[in-house]
Each structure stands twice: as C-alpha cells, then as structure tokens.
Length: 420
Ligand code: LLP
Image (cartoon, rainbow, N blue to C red):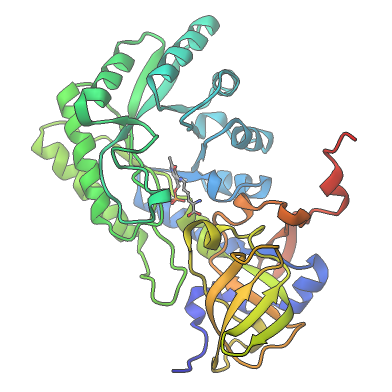
C-alpha cells in the first residue's frame, strides 16, 4: 500500500517551515525544535502532576534550561556536567534534582555548595560520602532515596532500570532498600524528603508504573518513615513510528496518581506529593532532524540505499537499540510513497543506519532534503564526533522565526582539544 507520510508525527510548524531556507542558513544536518511544542508539553506535565522535573539528559543546552525554567519545572541533572550547564544558565538551584549512581566527591560538593534542592541517593557509599561532606560544611542535604522496585517495564533491556539486576538504586529484595531508608532517616546530616524510582525509558505499558508505585508505597509503610514526596521517575514513551501509540500525559498521570492514592489508602498512610521526571516525552516529539541526501544507490536484488550527510554521530539510537524511525521528504510530504529504502549515514560502518525501512516517494534524488521526526530526545544529547564529523546545529523555531541556539561545530573545533 502506498500512502502519504503521516503528518501527525510532526508538529505542524515544523512541516510548514521553509526547509530549504533553514538548510541554507544553518546547514545540515540540523536539529529543528518547535519551541511552542516544547512549552506545550512542559505545561501539560505541570498541570497533571504535583511536581515535574525535566530530565535534562534527553536534551540539554542553555536555551532549553531557560525554557524549562520559564515553564516553572524542576530540572533533573545526572552528572556534574549537566549540573554545570544548568547552573551556568542561571537555573535556580533549589529546583534542581541531582542524580547519578556514582557521584564523585566533586559532584556532591558542587551540589551541596550550590544548595540544590534534592540529591537522589543511589548507594550506601554515597550516603557516607554525602554525610561527611555535609558535616564538613556544617550543612544538611535534602535527599530522596532511589528504590529499585523489581519491575519489568517492557522496554529495551538496555534502558530498563527497575529490575533487580539494575545498577541503579537500592533493591527492595532482601531488605536492602529498607536498610537504606532507615539509615538515611537516622542521619542528622541528611533530610529524607522522599523516595524515588525509575523503571525504564520508552515505556508504553502504563500499568508498569502502578506496580512500581505499589512496591514503593509498601516500603514506606514498612519503614514507617515520613515521606513528603514520591518521585516515580520518567520513561513515558514517545511516538516514533506511525504504528506507535499516542500516549496521553493526563492518562499517565491518572494511572500514577490513582496507584499512589490506592496504595496509600490500603496501608493507611498519608499520600505524598507525586513527582515525575520526563525527558523523552517532552523533548522527543518536538524536533525533527533535517539532512541533505548525497547519494542514492540501487543494488540489484538488494534494495536502495539513500545516504544522508549525518548518521550515527547525530543519532546513535538505531545502532544502540535498533530504534526505528520514520523519514519524509519535506518538499514532497503529501506524495504517495512507493519506494522502500534504507536511509544510511556517512560513517564508516555498515551499521550506520538512520532508518532501516523508510517509505519514501520515489524516485529520490541527491540534493533533496530528508527529515526524521521525533529526534528531539537522546539525539543531540548523545551525538558524537565519530569519523570527525562536526556535531549539528540546534535551531529553535518560534512563530515562524528560526534561531540557532547551539551553533554547528566547525572543523577547527575538531582539533581544539589537541595539545600537539
Ligand atoms: N529519570 C531518571 C532517573 C532516568 O534515568 C531517566 C532516563 C529519566 C528520568 C528520563 O527518562 P525518559 O522520560 O527520557 O524516558 N538513551 C536512551 C534512554 C536512556 C534513558 C536514561 N534515563 C534512549 O535513547 O532511548
């Protein structure tokens, strides 16, 4: 069957762009975000939960920190580097949530000195380290304890973090989480603000959250500690492919909030505030990547390769997780698609695939622009310089106006760290 591209995969302003003008001004590949879409998604979350921290690992730059700040969200950072970008952009430290399964002394010190609002404790070593640092400063730290609820989230195993074998958090089995919570509750340097769990990423089965909530609330009841907030992490899936479900934030919130209310009612404890940490579902669908097609190769008996001017350096997700994407030709978005092709990048690897099975209107010609939807999360943030390909620019579009918020790397940038 030959149907046109499903336009609902892309925010309308990104379809209406003058794509050639964007490419001429900023070059290709380029990440193009619809700023209204980013803000709309932040607001949708803010309205649905008691508190929302945007997970900056999904996509982070100064402009994004400011946008998230404007929208009143909190910010989740997972390393000293992410913390630095947030602080350098002027983000209020009290609204920062500091994560990481191996935070160094420097990272914890920076977090304490900046007075970040929440540090999420991930190990017994960290409890000792943070206590000692707080003691040396004559201060205290507000913390959450990260719990591993032992839940399968039905996603790719590399991004599933809630199971017993996860390197993150304290497992509920064998009383480990209980011991950690009690240890923190006894500390005179750490103030237990709440518990945290994160069961994975790109989750479509909302029920997984309800099961995780039940495990964590049971732990609160067992330990008898006072908890004012429960952070259920991020992970809501994004729609990459036509056949992927559209996930509704208010439904997700209803599932989580009902689960918290039910579990707390059952165990007769006061329900804590419910907080989430979405990354992908805010940033992902708000951007496309624009590429320029350079070569089209038909291999008899094999198929058609359409090669673009980026690839695994701007989107490693197909290589890492066999992630699927759609593709469209912005200039011919309404045309019937009769060509099945593999969109590949320009890297020296056979696995450098952008879209394994793209449906495009044929024939496709070198020089045309090609776009992939839903590349706003874990694209720019996981970009590399493999093959010394400069990383793309990031452009925000607002009311038809495009502005570069991260400049494209230059060839000179590629040698800027070399000492000889
Ligand atoms: N909170 C914590 C503690 C996390 O570890 C993560 C993601 C999030 C929140 C945000 O999850 P999200 O809402 O974005 O799913 N590179 C992978 C995804 C790794 C996710 C890591 N943690 C990918 O490209 O699919």
